[in-house]
Length: 213
Ligand code: AP5
Ligand code: MG
Image (cartoon, rainbow, N blue to C red; front, top):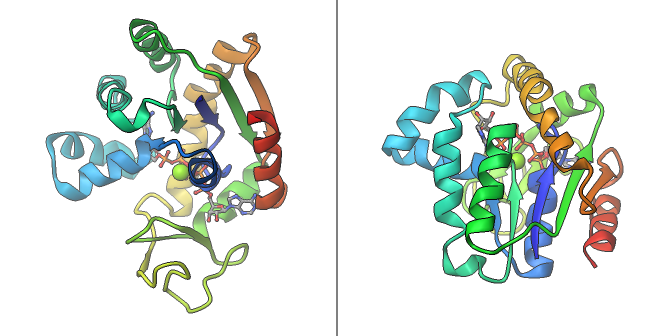
């Protein structure tokens, strides 16, 4: 099963992609996570991506299309994959169509998770993530049992460099200008669905599973 999870920053793409990955045993391909890893490792891609990510702008189509083209060719994607945060421009969606056609693959589901702007800002500015296992937390919606430590593995919780309010508002503006039009690329295909991301995380997950079957 090949799935695209869409939605604005903070909608819950990462939260739900991790759960879907566990339930359906297919990998989560988050371009944001891959780019952050590249920035941390100081690779060429990381050096090119850093400034755009810190300002809340988009990294070039060329870089992210290259990353995804390499990643979907890896062995663990043979049974399917979850795209989280890609495609984010119409050009990326067109590049994805071409790379899937070349591999005789297709997208089975495109799910857009929606949420209110002010909720998104509060979700993102309250977010922390485990530096070891990647589990996500929130200062009010999902508090760790011990402050600053992951419930699952005991790892240290960190916050993202782009999770301050000013950058979040820029990320939201960029989403409306450049990513929202991608919805039209998929809307008329039979595989497009919307899920209300303002519901409890468990309810959102249950609705996603109902769609995925
Ligand atoms: P990326 O990492 O993709 O960030 P994003 O799209 O801004 O989305 P987020 O990761 O912030 O939100 P999410 O939807 O995953 O929400 P989450 O589940 O964490 O991209 C970062 C940057 O990388 C971009 O700005 C760009 O520079 C670059 N980039 C990445 N991909 C690119 C591409 N394709 N092209 C160009 N550039 C690219 O949830 C958020 C919080 O809310 C958490 O604390 C969570 O616990 C909480 N939460 C989740 N669901 C709920 C719920 N139902 N109720 C209450 N709280 C909830
Ligand atoms: Mg995410």
